[in-house]
Image 1 (tube, rainbow, N blue to C red):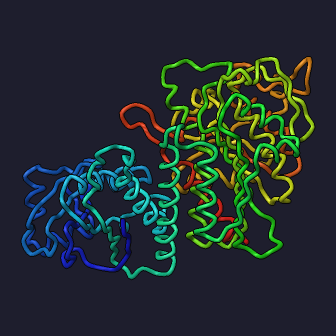
Image 2 (spheres, rainbow, N blue to C red):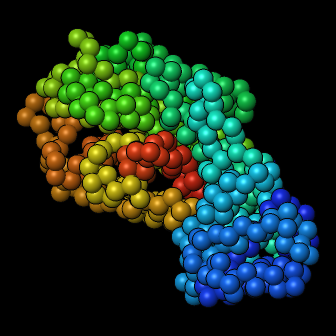
Length: 495
């Protein structure tokens, strides 16, 4: 979809569809009021007859409105002006797009960014319009023999009463790049495990490196063996697919600027290994590489933005399968850090691949390391499917990430990482166990990772509840690409 931003008046807009808002009790937004005057109060008459009461996210499509250049006018309910919040703005834009997609409109003009939203500026409103439009038009049916027809909407104009400044244009470009990154993340996440293997992810990284002039390094199992990554390799032992350690390097800052390192869990299918998962919904374990997909999507976004920052992506990728060579509960392995791990449950494999990748990250002398992983079902129990779990060894970093997520509407909740939980990982036979029991499962998983991150400031995002949706809307969400992208935009601005 093509996006643009411009100054304009609603009644003169030559478009297939013009979108304006109506508050509760029929009060017209400024853009709707302009339309109404040009149409000799046609909108007011329609509203007076009770066809639209301004209820939040309600819509009414009008054709051939007199005195109006556009083919269609879409009225959308805004609710009470005093209650109009960020979430309500998102609900309104999403409702508009759903309504437009039911028409044959190939282009549309949104007159919504002039609306006052509590605590949000024009930049935010522009970004949300772009991201929601991209989300509404995303399709993942390339593996069907007869893919569905693409949506008719090809061009979206964001129109305001004032002339857009450089910040508005920048917001549009950034949002377009983030949307591109989210699309990649969702596409990779939705692919089945027989296609999206560790080798496939490595090939995707190579293609991205070629397209954006990045440095790419792929470590094979023999390379990881030499480095002592026995924890990571213990997960791949049961699979016929070889593990890969994928590294992408983006140099947008000055040469000696310390990089931000993003580590994405890349388990391309997780059967649970010998600790086999129940069969129901096991197909969704193709999404266990959404951490890897999200860091690739974020790299795509910042490369398109040409962000002035140094960023490195590390992806430890493997399958977790119950072969005769697979790790068994009770096995003990040595990590790259030298610490030994008693594997009490082979379905807690994500932390086993991440711990070696986190140790490997130290060689880049990072300014910050953030790992992203569909790590624990316990995080879903704690936070549901709304917020990602956020853990960090530095409160300042946690706040930066939480603030970025709040602004991007890709929210994360700061969880405790207190030493009190560490004792749950004690082992009689090794330096630690890979699980800490049911109580505080997402916290003890983060505590496990914290043992490998003492050399640098670090944060962990548990996206088990936010990386994909189940049921009739099953599919990857593209999160937390907006959060990570906004965090990096903020870091680049600070530099």
